[in-house]
Image (cartoon, rainbow, N blue to C red; front, side):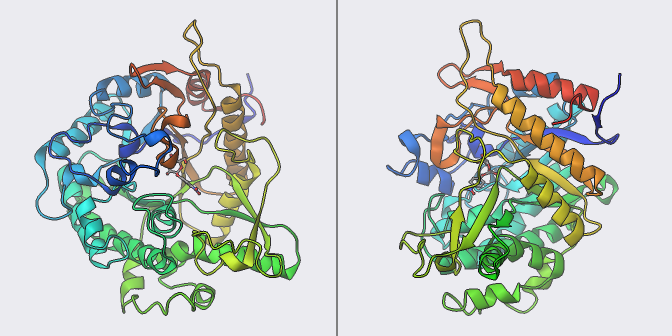
Length: 467
Ligand code: PNW
């Protein structure tokens, strides 16, 4: 039988999760609070007052969850390491029990024939480091590099891919700019300082990882960004300038330091009223540009922008995650069906992003480290979870990856977000991204139809029908 959309041999098929979203066990084995424990326990911050105290109880159900991955047939599994489990105060020696958990996880994965892909920072900063100033403070970058070294020394022989940071844009601009994520601060200058110190932390951690990893294992070192797939709503130079501004403060603010060792000139100009960037010291940008082996991309939806109406229609005075750009830009709703997040379904955006990176970063292997959709799934009385919209979403987006591959983008793998329904940050448990349904009252796991569909895709190595 012919298969129209076959993926290359060796293509990595995975699912992704993050520690705070699934582990629970928030007070066990020496783990201390992270900024997300503090934030979620603060009334009004997370929908329904939900916290990650129990989450999907993955900390105690690791074997069951690895068995699920085995049933899916994935080649890779992307998880994150909780910094406050491994180094509770963000300083000093590692906690054995914390490391043991990730050692068991990695060993269990390897026994199942699954490559462990570990992210060091998926937003759970030890609260003590936030109390000392958090990411706007330079010291946090040095703390992170030390933690990276501890983790690599303990786990370096069994992790296949090390990702330093997940989505530093969210950590900096949602955490310190708009304040909708932990720690919930609302300051443009704090967000820009955080972004720089995250770039610095990334580069320092790459060095610490390279030093600590046994060279024989040739582990891959990577970084995951949630780049905006940007469209200007017209060719009018004012609309194109709005897109340039968002590209600077959301994409090139990370891409330029990490891949070219420089700050975007236009970003520095756009943000001149916010900061003079004097917190950037000599050598920082060269440090941030330490060579890495691949770039991870998280993609859910595209972003369309136009020039703000005269007077600045979007200048509502509300805290914004677009430091220096907010008064110039209007966000235009993208057409198409919507997920439960109210995010538009538009697979072309993923294609456009991958092709842009093919052109802008020649020679850099790409991984789609997150892609998926939330829908209001429920287990029917027969125990089935029918999620045809998710299957359609995934099919369309894998089709977009295939098109990008055919057009020369060097995409090495695809990690579906997410394995399990989980704690969706400010939305708590109200949004279900899993291909495995979790009944949070009983912790019962049920494969959704999309999980069976994904297992078939992996087994065949591609899609039977064009999207
Ligand atoms: C990513 N935004 O988060 C994260 O890496 C995941 O942990 C998360 O569950 C997933 O996407 C789905 O939300 C984002 O508002 C959260 O632009 C918010 C935004 C982007 C990414």
